[in-house]
Image 1 (spheres, rainbow, N blue to C red):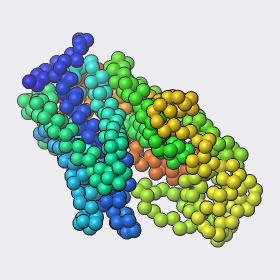
Image 2 (image 1 turned 180 degrees about the vertical axis):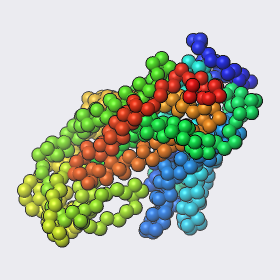
Image 3 (image 1 turned 90 degrees about the horizontal axis):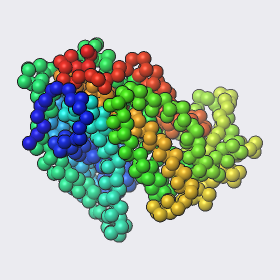
Image 4 (image 1 turned 60 degrees about the horizontal axis):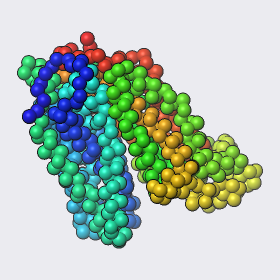
Length: 560
C-alpha cells in the first residue's frame, strides 16, 4: 500500500507515517550504494590494480586511471541528463529503480571479473565499463531519490524528510569499512589479496535485492501522478530545462549560488581532510580513518538537524552561512589540526627556509587531475617532490636558461639528480620530520584514540569541518527540488548537483595539490574551496531565491 497522491499542502505538525518512512528508506538505499561503492573502490584500489592492470604496462595504467576518474566524476552530469530526462517523462520511481539496478549490478560484476592474467586487456576494459555504468547511473540516482522523497513529504517538512538522504554517505562509509575490516580480521593477507577483496563487491547484491524489493512496493510520487493525470508532462525536458533562459537561469543560479560552494565545503570537510591528514601531515592510514570516522559519527545527526532547521528558517541562510563560515575559518582550523597531529612539521615550516631559483619558463602549473602527467623539467620535479614531502619553499626567478638552484637555510644543495631527493634530505636534516616520526600522532585502535588527548582534539577539529558539511548538504536536496517545476524537476536539479559535486568537488584534491606545489605552502590549497565558497556566498546572496514556502504542486513550480 503506497502513499496516496494528495497534492494539498500539509502544514500540520504530525509524526512521520510508516509509509513515509518506507519512502525515505527505499529512496536512500540507492544512494547508500553510491557511497558503499565509492569507498570500496578507494579502499581496495591496490587490490584492483594488482588484478586488472599489468604491473609494468604504463599505457594500460594510463587508460585504467583515466577512465576510472571519468567514471567517478566526469560522466555523472551526463547521467543526470539521460536519467533526468527519463524521470520527467516516464516517472521518478521507475527511473531511479533503473539507475539503482544498473549501479548495483555493475558493483556486483566487479567482484566476478577475471584478472588480467586470465583474460588480458579485457580485464581492465571490463572494469572501466562497469565504472562508466556506475558513473552514469549515479548521475540519475540522487536526483530521483531527492525528488521522490520531496514529492511525498508534507509541505512544511521537505527539508527534514530529504535530509535523511544526505546521511547515506556516512552509512555507505561505515558499511564498506565494516565489511572490509571483518574480512581482514578473518582471513590471511594472502587470501584477502587473492579473492577476499572481491567479497565486498559481491555482497552488494544483497543490498540491491533489498532495495529493489522495497522500491517495487511503492507507487509513483504524488506530484508526478497529478501532472500525468492532467497531461502536463514535458515532452522535451532537456530543451525545456536548459534551452529556455527562464529555466536555464535557475539551473545556473543553483550551480553557482548553491551546489558549487556546497560541493567544495563537503569535499574539504570529508575527503580533503583525509588527504591532508595522510598525505600532508603523514598520519598513518589507520589513525586517520579512525579520527575521521569518529568525527563523522558525531556529525551525521546534524544533516537531519539542519534539514529540519531549514523548514523553520529557510534553506538559503543555512547553506550560505555554511559556505561563509567555512571560508573564514578553514585556515585557522587546518592550522590547528596540523599543529596537533604533526607539531614538528609546523615548527619546521617556520624555522627551515628552503629557496629555489629557476628559469620561470621551466616551471609549469602542476595540475594533474588523473595522476598520469609526466613532469620532466627539474623545476617541476623538485617542486612536486617538496610538496609531496609537505615542505614549504620560496621560488625566485632566475635568468633564462639557468639551472635550478636550491638552498636550505642559506646553504647550497646539489640538484644534479634533478629529483629533489637531496633537497628533501637537507631539509629533514635541518628539522623537517620524516614519515613515521615519533612526534606524529599515532592511535591505531578505537581505544587508543579515545585515550589520547591529541586524538580527541583532532576529532573535535574535524567535527567542526563535518558540521560545516552538514550545514551546506543537509538542506540542499529540498532547495534543488523546490527550485524547479514538476515537469522538469528531475532534469533541472540533477545537472547542477552533479556538475557541482562531480566537477567543482571532484577536482578539489588535484587542484589543491597543484596550488600547494606551485606556491610552496602546504595550506595554500585551501584557497580553492575558500574562493569557490565565497563566490557561491555572493552569488547565492544576490540571486538565489528562498524556496521553503513554495508549492511544488503548482503548475508554474517555484516561480510564483
